Structure formats: structure tokens, C-alpha cells
Length: 185
Image (cartoon, rainbow, N blue to C red; front, side, top):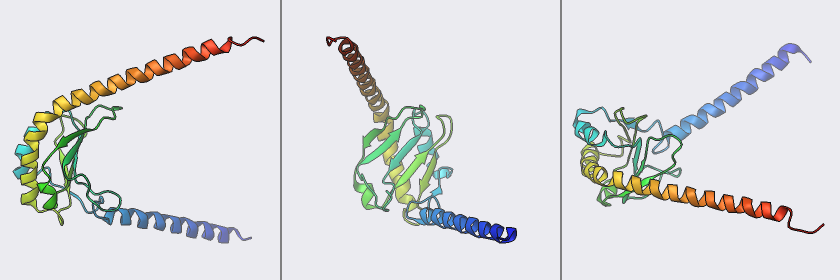
């Protein structure tokens, strides 16, 4: 077989794979709620008050009514918040009124650390700005009032669960040690 023809085949296969990956990424990004349909509006001066209220929270992710893989919005009565602590897989749920879901409000707020400003990701074509602003102004005091205590509760529950798991592991290890030499030979 000719060396040039095998190189051509390799180039064609590589281009086809790259094109397939590219089309897949674009199609995922263009779905409702995808990374190509959302915009960061966190830097708008109209949202500066919300930024200031939420800045001191030990949180790096707030989510309300973001779309799932099927493009549907879920949980119209809750904001899901995750702390900034690395390796801590705790999610705190804050109850909010369902009225904002009927207006089509949905957003995700993220930041890398407590010192950074929030990125507020929203589908501009779907969520009217006045409704988003009003919802954020309504949610911010509820979150600030409830989140610190709920985070302490969740961490306490996680610590208790970890303690129970460690106790179970210890008991299992003891049982195995007792079983090793318990049978006559």
C-alpha cells in the first residue's frame, strides 16, 4: 500500500472525528440552557446591590430553575447553594416562592471564591431582565437570612454521618478480626 494513501486515510478519519466532536459540542451548547445560550449579567450596575448582599456568603454556586438535560426547568420553589470549600459535597436548599417560576425566571450564579464577584448566567432571550432583577432582589435577603444556619446544619449532619460510617467500618474490621481465628482447624 502506498504511504501517501494511508496518510490521506488518517487525515480524513481525523477530520471526520474532529468535525463530529465539534458538531456535538455546538449542539449541546445551543440547547436551551446550554453554554452558548446563556450570558453573564453579573457585572450590570443594576445588580450591584444583589452582588453586595450575597458577597459575604460562604457559597460559590447558587442555582434556581436552570434547565436539565432535557431542557426542562425543575424545582420552582427552591434555590440550591453549594459552598466554596473544595472536597465538600454539600448542597443547601433554600425555599423561595414559586411565583418566579411562572415568570420564566431561571439563573445560575457562580464564582471561584468568596472574594470574587458573582457571575450571573441567564438566558437573555428567555428571561426578562426586570423579572430577573426583581427575583434576585427578593431571593437575596431570604438566602442571607437562612443560608448560614442551614449550612451549619448540613455540615453537622454530614459530620454525624461520617462518624457513623467510621463506626460501622471499625465494627466491620473488628468482626473480621474476630472471625479470622474463630474456627477450629
